[in-house]
Image (cartoon, rainbow over all chains, first blue to last red; front, side, top):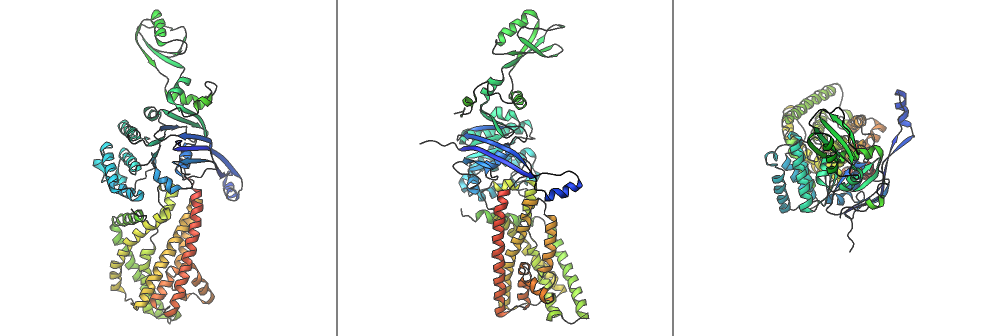
Length: 345
Length: 264
């Protein structure tokens, strides 16, 4: 039997159409009667497949089409063309059935009921999903434990801090044992401790329960910490789909050697490396890691200069992705066909 | 776990949510009593000048307006108002990601609020009885009234639903709400018995759906409609209920397809 990917999209496309605004006060009135439309392509030709149990980072700048894609996959937005199945269902045709399979967490929008104590939101969700009392109890106890929700279970949601509310939202999204969970900017605005708690939770749910997780975020440290595979989109189109390491291999061709000098040299020059920054006695040298190893460079530096400390900076995901947004992805580096198929097995 | 469970839970939660606003009990009973007093004064003064209009004696008129006010305690609950807020704030997206029917959710939430407000009828009535005497109808009339009231409640729900569903297209419905509210207050018979409208106008107004909400139950209550005349009136309500439900279903289908969540 062929195992179907749990999420599969083919040439998914969404165009938003709005009336063209005519400027000026009179223009506002004319806008009312205008038949002049502007089309904005939010998602273009999105073909993607995600296997059950994967944890995929879905990355893109603001307005790249991330949320639009998620909305189509959750069944609340009908695509202009193309198709998609989520756990065998077409989400926008079978919204309610699809909803049983999924859990959703929005960093900026709570699904908890504002005036109710947290625990009552959970009870309401149990009724909504028709979860069995035993299973619900078990999940609730477990989540209360690992998300440390004891102290605020009986507090009305509107009185919770952001970190507490997010933990509540995570539990709420997972109480009914969804097969797929979409996380949309889940750690936005959280402090380091809360972020870490959330990441541990996500990682555990993915590992222990085999829940498929699609993580949309700006915070690349979330992605680096949690997922191996990333899907990068820009201007509505898929730019890269593969592992983080592979992206780093292709793009992070340069490493940086940071050297602390023992004496004040007026000028620093090293063969094969470029000085990319100097701050007092700290010099940053960028070098092509394909050309030679760090040990070689260190030897060259120490031959000519007296050094107290060295360290190496690996290219970070953020700078790589920033470069891709600015320069575009270079398929010439590696044939794209090699990257596209599921790089993570 | 049966399919109705989530909706019962919504109604329960709405009920207990309303119950947390305790001060509102006093303000709504207080304003109710004030309105009963004002209307009694107005009608008594008017009747002192003229003979009974449309053959309605003063005690029947006071009964009519007082019962209308009692009904409004329940009918002014609008469970669908949250559509507007949810569309504007984009939280409707979160609700659509749940395996529930949103119209049923709005209805059950509104129904929970209604039940709470229905409890207010008792103290309101008790206070009102200090000021006014109201007639009690015969048992068949009371049953007819209850039936007509339930049907009117349904028509009122769908009317509210349709008004609030406009938010899916314009995101701003305040002006429409206000307009429909004024028209409905006047044409539903909440303020005046519709039999006071002259001739042809009265016929037209009586045939409109608004009449199903207040006028039909109240006419049965004060005995303007009795015997076999009650049945065509109830059937008219049923017809409006079905028509409004059908329109609402169609509008909801369209609205769902249109969900464009602001932001994101």
